[in-house]
Image 1 (cartoon, rainbow, N blue to C red):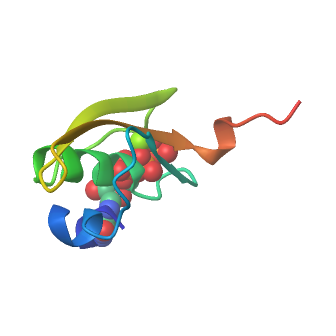
Image 2 (image 1 turned 135 degrees about the vertical axis):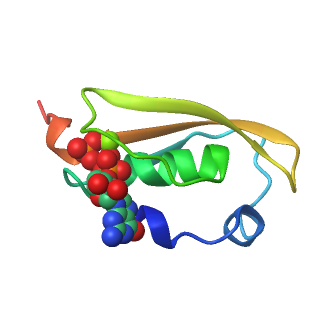
Length: 81
Ligand SMILES: Nc1nc2c(ncn2[C@@H]2O[C@H](COP(=O)(O)OP(=O)(O)OP(=O)(O)O)[C@@H](O)[C@H]2O)c(=O)[nH]1
Ligand SMILES: [Mg+2]
């Protein structure tokens, strides 16, 4: 999943220009969430290890000049009370 992502403008050009929002990448263990996160943040493929907890980065959206918090989170860590 993480390797097959397209360029940032193609992804974010369709987003409405909200004042602010968070992007959360959810998925099963080993689905490629962290790979997507670093691909979006640094525009490069990074070798990953299984995440404990979650990863977070801030990312600048070039088309809207916004800086957005970006999280990747395993669905298996989510607990419904
Ligand atoms: N072939 C292929 N491998 C991928 C792709 N995206 C990620 N991987 C590989 O899949 C493995 C898991 O990727 P991660 O990004 O660590 O997955 P994750 O969802 O963050 O995993 P957890 O943190 O354990 O939940 C790594 O070895 C990646 O290199 C892809 O698009 N294609
Ligand atoms: Mg991870």
